[in-house]
Length: 314
Ligand code: ACO
Image 1: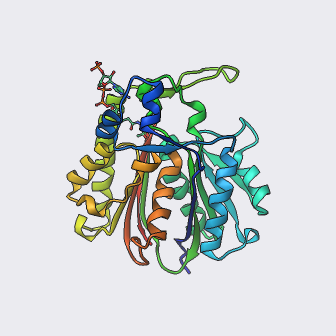
Image 2: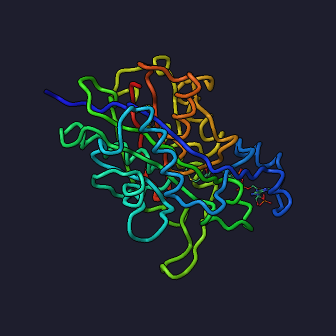
Image 3: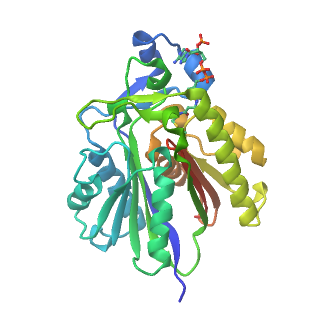
């Protein structure tokens, strides 16, 4: 019998420490008005000693609880992160041990597109009949690789984790998925160290990133609709990577989706990179906006660039 992949649980976790725009005003030549107007972000969470694995663990526990499965029933863990706790071993294996699972576990790195890449990877294992339950996590502590004196990047990012359990089902939850990369944009957005014994920080050409993000995410949204024979009015919710309100608004406008159908968390989360999509998904599932049977358009782009999207029936 053909197997399909379906999301059976979501979960998320944010570290308690908040940094507001007003607090950033004290150390940077910036203002709440500028940050809110240009990005839509008001505050972000940052770790205060917690690790990427700590955040992932809390998000994963909540996810397993909703999916009503035990850690021993997980067949594979894929952890999307740009900020692993160590160069090795993989943060996913630390998570596997701490959550009490007995399964393969690996990290996946596609920066802000990491969760989309991880979900698409998990989908293959399930549709091929190899695994029944895959825990897919996005967890980031970007605050550790931000130059807090650089106003062009320090205002954008936050820390957090989100996760889903993807399980084998008779009917399709994931109905379409697509991932792409173009590695010729290295200097537009990267961490500026070349050697592992140097400390590096995020460096970005904001304008370039903005234009590429709008173009590629609008293209992928259109492709998903076209390939799924759907119109924007048939989409229940778009759950986009939470980078910038202006990027998200431009994409929604291009595909004719009203902003009332877009899940937004960036005002209080900032850009949490690979964690932003599962965080937004979990918020909207738990507050009752996303319901069983809803058609969701998930999409994200990250440095590289790498980008992709999925059509998911929740
Ligand atoms: N506060 C006040 N002024 C600032 C700040 C700040 N925090 N940052 C930059 N400025 C200044 C600049 O120095 C510049 O001043 P100048 O005109 O005197 O030279 C002016 O504001 C305009 O700067 P721009 O970079 O042109 O501003 P822009 O409108 O492009 O907004 C921003 C910058 C918010 C970074 C925008 O380009 C953006 O969001 N780009 C997308 C980047 C992004 O989302 N990256 C996330 C990671 S990648 C991903 O997740 C897809």
